[in-house]
Amino acid sequence: MTAGLGRLIGRAVSPGAVIGLQGPLGAGKTELVRGLAQGLGISADDISSPTFVLEVVYDIAPSAEHKELETFHHWDLYRITTGEIECEIFDNAGDARRITAVEWPERVPAVEDLLDVRILVDFLDSPAGAEPVPGADFTQDSGKRRITVEVMRGGVLAEALAAYGESQQGMSKR
Image (tube, rainbow, N blue to C red):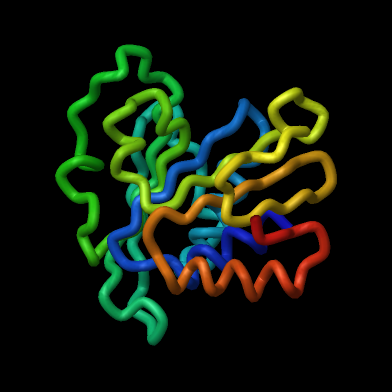
């Protein structure tokens, strides 16, 4: 279900979107990014966590769904400890030729201000994972994890999530 939700987001997200993924190590953030990449027409096998390189860029093949998109940027800020970083995320937020996914955006507060979509992935047996998230647009419980999606900007994505929620058990509009 994690990859399926990612694929839906990849197909419906607005060009130029910055998507933040938060959650503990091993919760499924990169798995969700693999699904997101599939929704953009990129092979999930090509996706790996950029923990040690900060960013990996993938080309997006032209398609009817994503005519204007050229690249998918996958960032992992886990190793950032200062809260300060100069990077392309700031320069290219909103660029309609790209989609950007950022794991651990909370490590750099200025990046959080750029998010169009925030995805929280947590374990159901953790104290935070068992609690509902106030203000969340959608929540999906699957197996041992909870995925919560908050859409700040992106009406098409919000509509797609609502339709997906109606078709999947365990996902609800908040």
